[in-house]
Length: 287
Image 1 (cartoon, rainbow, N blue to C red):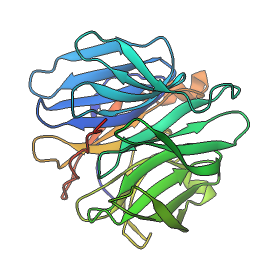
Image 2: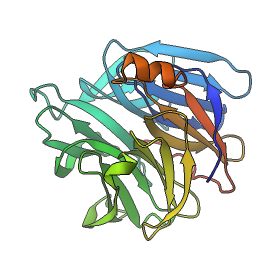
Image 3: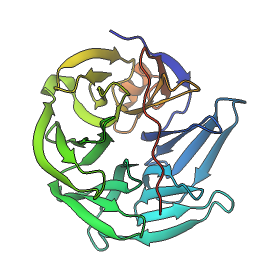
């Protein structure tokens, strides 16, 4: 068992999508239902919040500056100087109550993000540097955590409702995926797999919604270790810190009863693990 410590009193309704920016030592994360994202400096403790006026599922670094986002209205850029949004595309325009959920930039500089909606017929999209949007997977119930192996040959991808993490062969040059196979099927008693990250040794860290834990799996899908948390709904995790050996974990309080919230006063906060392994550097979107 690995110990986690309380890090920040974020109290996010639905905290998600932690992102590490190494040069200014900044941690970003989103509050999906709070319709905002946060930026916290490890250097001076400055904490900024940016209200978007709509749900935000994920964010990622953009090489030319600012961020690329997955929001309710679609895929967009966020300008760090003006704090304004510029839409890229909405591939699910007209789909009832659909929104973008988790996403990341892949090795090679392409942005990947998936959706969720009431009809449980969601998809995974890839945005290339030329801003063309490609459908990469369909028939997904709740598109969630995504990550890549250190050798860039495997992509891991989560569909939360069936409690499944898949593995794909990943082609770095073309950005294509193939040969989908079951990587981990999470038992009912361990909750639902949510956001994930892949460390520098190729092990997968997956947060378990309703599971009170983050699990580290080896590349064969075997449980290597577990981080138990004092909150029912951890949502995602990422490596950061000056040495990339700090695991930041987001959580949520949405959907908990008043009694459950009283029993879990830290629900929605951020947690920290000082790990014996380093993460991988965040990729930047080249568009």
